[in-house]
Image (cartoon, rainbow, N blue to C red; front, top):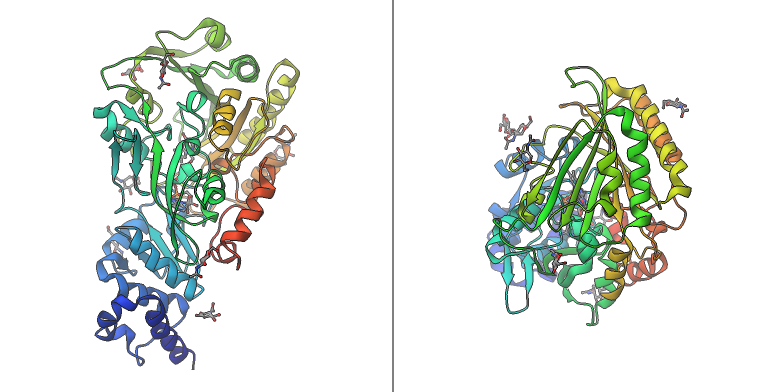
Length: 513
Ligand SMILES: Cc1cc2nc3c(=O)[nH]c(=O)nc-3n(C[C@H](O)[C@H](O)[C@H](O)COP(=O)(O)OP(=O)(O)OC[C@H]3O[C@@H](n4cnc5c(N)ncnc54)[C@H](O)[C@@H]3O)c2cc1C
Ligand SMILES: *[C@@H]1O[C@H](CO)[C@@H](O)[C@H](O)[C@H]1NC(C)=O
Ligand SMILES: *[C@@H]1O[C@H](CO)[C@@H](O)[C@H](O)[C@H]1NC(C)=O
Ligand SMILES: *[C@@H]1O[C@H](CO)[C@@H](O)[C@H](O)[C@H]1NC(C)=O
Ligand SMILES: *[C@@H]1O[C@H](CO)[C@@H](O)[C@H](O)[C@H]1NC(C)=O
Ligand SMILES: *[C@@H]1O[C@H](CO)[C@@H](O)[C@H](O)[C@H]1NC(C)=O
Ligand SMILES: *[C@@H]1O[C@H](CO)[C@@H](O)[C@H](O)[C@H]1NC(C)=O
Ligand SMILES: *[C@@H]1O[C@H](CO)[C@@H](O)[C@H](O)[C@H]1NC(C)=O
């Protein structure tokens, strides 16, 4: 009798894991042996609900459940219907939820800002979703000069709330992206000077896969876990508190940065590709940063399909130095808007404050390319293959893009000097390459032909051997961890903290462990 079996399990689990809640459990109908149950996920959900109380656990009829599933950042997530969503308020709640997920061997996923483009990495069907939307506090600790963030905070929010102190974390470049960014590394406008976001970890509270809560630092007994979490994505536990180094970025009225956006016509795209290639070889000034690439506007463009080049260029200083940005500045452009900016302005530059970007699915893929004149051909080849994809499928997307973020040597060295990360690139600057496709609003399934075309392009895009792919911008089929400098370390550390391989069996995420 499976239902009776499962109810016994529910009780056994409550006794073993939730001693303090037994009084509550005995008065709860779900703990009754006659209660109807269907599968382990249902039992796990009911057990978590007994332990945490109803408001923190919702099934399909709940208002927060509805909102989480029906207005996600990535429209594809509306296809996933967890048995319940847990909305923890603190680490203790996460500990309870994870213990029961582990006990009942159910599928699960964790969602923070919800921006993952990888289907199922932050969503689950018929399992337990842990959503951090009610754990979003951000605070500055002046005595330690650190920033403490709960896992559900957003980057624009953190910059806004801390502006008063003149500090900011090394986080995302776009307002509503969330803290999950740090676990994949984190590419920030501050990164050339201050490393990947994760390189600034000071202390992390982590709920291990078996529900044990530990605090890990660069020097305590969990230092291996600490390093693995800098690039290990969702594989090494659930982070319930991030303490990171504060960066002194100044107040909103201190326009200490200079830069903005240049847009280019299609005819400039090859020159732009070369500028991107040359920049990463020739420049290692930590005050300089850019993100540049090409975009192909498809179905929703009023004038029909069109290609544009874009460069967001910023310099921590009073101008964009010619010696660094000269090539970008001299290419024929359509528009340029370069002004003095505060760090807060920089963060809200790429995506304006409060812009609603939900309603579309997201699809990504990654490559990595070193630069310099010898590699110009690889950049031109990337452009050619991407254009072919974009021309072929322009009637099936709103935007197709190919974007390049420099990871200069200064950034790589910063990480090495701070106990290292799992990504561990060679000591040569390179570009993280992102191929993105945004289908039209409301489209839940792309055509098989476009998916084949996407996979073909990911094979065609040249990659410099030995350079790491960026997990936060990859396609779920890409073997990203295998490109890390510290892959062997990552595998060892995973085996130590999840000996039964529960995470890789029960939650979707990067391959290779
Ligand atoms: C518009 C846009 C702009 C972006 N800009 C940048 C950028 O500037 N720099 C950059 O580096 N990346 C950027 N990204 C990529 C971004 O890093 C990834 O999408 C990242 O996954 C976002 O984290 P999240 O918390 O928003 O998403 P989520 O999808 O909620 O989380 C991402 C992954 O991390 C896991 N996760 C989240 N929180 C936890 C936790 N506490 N414990 C364990 N696992 C957890 C989730 O399960 C999921 O697998 C951008 C993405 C988008 C869509
Ligand atoms: C979810 O909310 C929407 C409106 O916000 C409503 O139309 C819909 O019926 C709700 N769905 C469920 C399952 O409650
Ligand atoms: C349900 O959980 C029990 C352990 O509590 C486990 O033995 C069993 O395999 C699980 N069932 C499924 C279908 O995963
Ligand atoms: C900007 O540059 C100045 C001078 O080079 C430096 O002191 C400051 O720390 C930099 N700011 C950031 C946020 O890196
Ligand atoms: C130029 O950038 C500034 C700062 O972000 C913005 O306020 C202004 O509207 C922009 N101007 C144009 C013409 O886009
Ligand atoms: C954002 O846009 C989507 C789709 O267009 C809509 O469903 C959603 O309600 C909007 N969200 C907000 C906060 O306006
Ligand atoms: C262009 O794209 C189409 C569709 O993916 C593909 O069939 C074709 O082989 C591509 N051509 C080249 C030269 O890559
Ligand atoms: C949980 O996992 C960790 C890491 O593998 C291990 O050290 C610890 O003993 C485990 N705790 C329990 C209660 O099994």
